Every structure is written in structure tokens, then in C-alpha cells.
Image (cartoon, rainbow, N blue to C red; front, side):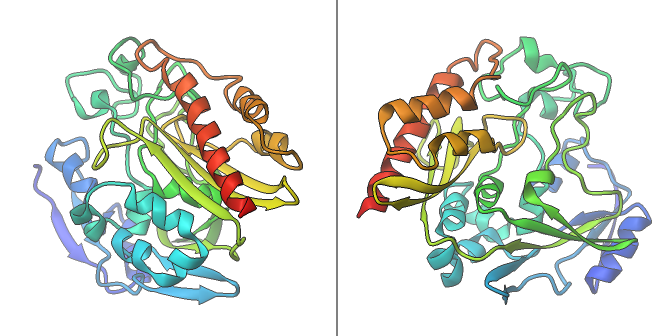
Length: 326
């Protein structure tokens, strides 16, 4: 690991000032430390934000404000989250291991980088790690890679679970920077690769995530289905998050988000419009999957994701609609 200077910020304002000077923020370190060990990230100065005021979960209107330093474990265990936003708790508990959830934070989880093997192997071409070097995954081993939102420059997926649930819940990311505070709808936070895969999100240089705001509870049936190679401590092959309400045998409201399908947590409002107002049926689920996957493109080893997500979507919707009738 390259030598670096470690400082501790006393407040969010202090951290933002350090970031403006070129420091890199660290909280739990569950991703950044790995990247530093491999010298994929080699900052000269690291600023710890663990002593700041960002570790609380507090009510905000009818919603909830989850501080950037709240650990994944604490967020999933919070009774307000479990009762009113169970989709978020379920998604968090489906990810990583208990040890990592005890360390990983809300803000850091949103900013985690891809787990593409070519990104982590510094002998291989990766535009996300070294812009302009190429994308070895396109013609390489790409079983875990994206089938939506890809570009000639990158086909890596966003690996997390928490952000997928937050996308279905219409969460908002709160940030502070040199120009003050701003709010980023989570649907606009993660950035598709385009011709510059090195930029994972829409944070401006020097900005710091301070919290995530969850809107008022919907009262709907919330399910998170994660399909993976083994039952624990594995990234998704595909995941489906649904928040759904039934009314007189029809789908009255539906929010859907997908993980490990696209280069970012994926939501397509056209899919939801296909479902709303309709009676649940296998043919309806197939129609929704057709809309979702109309632009999907596999790269060989990941071709199986296309039929897999169609089956996962149907199973998740069937469970949600049957539960909603009860």
C-alpha cells in the first residue's frame, strides 16, 4: 500500500473542507481499503469522517433521515426501518456478511465501486480503472456483468443491494459541498458508463454524502428477491425489489428496481405502467419482463441473466400480489 496521511474530521463541514483540498473520505473502509491495498486507489491524504455528526437515524416529516455514517447493520435493525421500509432492511440483510454490515456505512455503500474482476486485476484493460485502456470484460469472462445500460467502454454492474431497495423507495441522497447543500434523487445518483466509466456517480469533486432521506411509508407489500450462486455472502446474479399495493384484485401501485442487471441500480417506469391497474397473471408478468428487457444485450457468459430476471420478476410479483390480497 502506498504511504498516505490519515486525518480525522471533527464535523461534516471539516470533512468537506478537507475534500476540497484533495483528500479522500473514509468511513467503514470496507471498499476503499481493498482498493488502496491493490493501489487501484492511491490517495495522498485520507480523511476519516467517523467522528462527525452523521451517524444518527432521525424522523424527517413523515419520512426518515438515515445519516451517512449509520452502519448497514444498524439501519437494518432499526424498528422504524423494519416496520415502515422493510424493503430496505431486507436488501441490506441480503448483502455481505454480518462483520461487513457492522462496519459498512450508508454513504460508503452508495459509493462502492464495481466488483468486476478486470477492474481489480491491474494487469488487465479496464476503462473504469484506467480511462482509455479498453474493456477486457466485453470479450472475457463476463458472467456477472450487465445486460442493460452498457457501452462500448464498460459492461460492469453496480454490485450493491441497499441502493436497489432505495431506488424502489424513491430515496433522496443529501450532500454537502463547497457550494452548500443539495439533494440528489437516488435515480439520478448513479451514473451509467457512457464513454467515461471512471465516474460512478454524480457527486461533484469535494462533495460529501451526509444522509439519505426516505419518503413517507407507502404501506405496500415490500419484497426483495436476490438470486445468487450461494445463499450467503455472494453478490447477486440478479435481484428484484418491489413495493406494491393491491386494490380489489388489481395492482393499484407498483415500484420495481433491479440489481446486477444494469450498470447502475435499474428502474424502468414503463415496466411499472404495464402492471398498474391490471389483474395479476403470468401473461402480465411476461409482458412486464418484455418491456424491461427490450434493450437487453448479453455478452456470452451472461446471456442467462435475461431469462433469469424474467423468471425472478414473475416470482417476485406473484409473491407480492398474493400477499397483497391477504
